[in-house]
Length: 165
Figure (cartoon, helix red, strand yellow):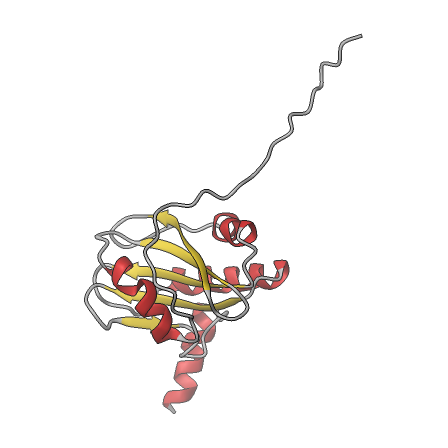
């Protein structure tokens, strides 16, 4: 008798593309910006990417997760962490750009960051930072530097209100 329910077997592999970075280790926001900040600031629409790093801060690779519109880019945890898992990444840095040059995070930016931080904790690949890069040199916003990594928009606004008092 013939088996009608054959299960296909697949193999998954990482496909390398041409590189864009140096051998610089990422130890903070400025290092991360130096590695890919200028590259993503040149886009005329929002892109969201993930930088995969080793435990010593060496950059393994960078993956553009999504390309959106002038002022938004949808991001799925599954897509963000796919390259991280395949790269055996110890941690990730998240990046996206704001073509307008205004690097203040939107409500959607806070919610996406919070969700990705939670997912990273769940799978054991921590999010080191989420950095927004504006058009033009030197325009950046680090969620970590503002102590807002993993906060919701409401929590961040409340925190700012308390600090302003």
